[in-house]
Length: 297
Image (tube, rainbow, N blue to C red; front, side, top):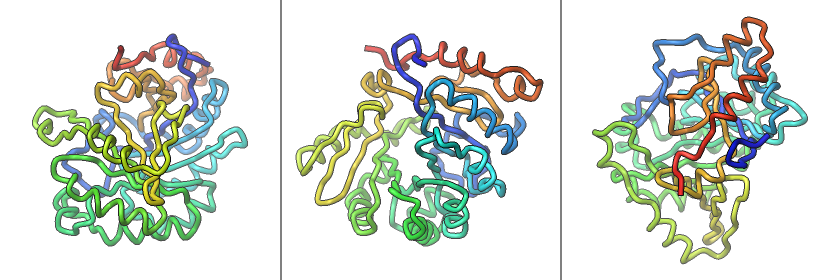
């Protein structure tokens, strides 16, 4: 199914918990207040994902908060697993990844994205309010060992982290990970000074790249190969190209369909209708109808 702007729906991002074991200063908590709303069960998540297949969803991304805090995560993955789903991935901070990587692989998870903004232990602890960088690195290496690949490292470009980019690139090249450089979206006014324009960074990498590919079904994003390292950019701010080719809808941890990453004023309740025995397909139709590019030409 396409929305009013001719954009097909191919990807579904599921937030399964608002809780996290880190307190990164920049976290926007998916725009939701964790004091309200009931967590969806594994069975409910499975039923919602199953309904999404009718509308073209073929890729699932599981996120949080920190999704590894849910002890029933392998069960959630098993409920989602379907021959129509081509890819099930997980975004994590990596703290618990070493412990659970094999269980997640056995349950049917395909790959993981791990957030890593710095390799400096002191800076990492400061950004995350106490996190241990060694736990993250061990988690990344374990995930690669069990086959949760291609593994992506999510690097958030901010004024306090851009100096770490060369080291992060070297690390990803060494372990065989893909590097995803993400533009920071300052959701709060007091965080605006941390924003960094990633366009010059992308231009520099493009200039030195050995190969460049365009990912048609990923917001027309380009992938650069530089000295054997694959580098991608996620640049949603003021980016009409990103918005005009968006193929993703979202599900909040408490059961609301979210048509747009950057909006929280047009959510569509789907969990409560499901619990009331309703046919939830009409709520997907409403969500898709509500979709519009946040950044228009």
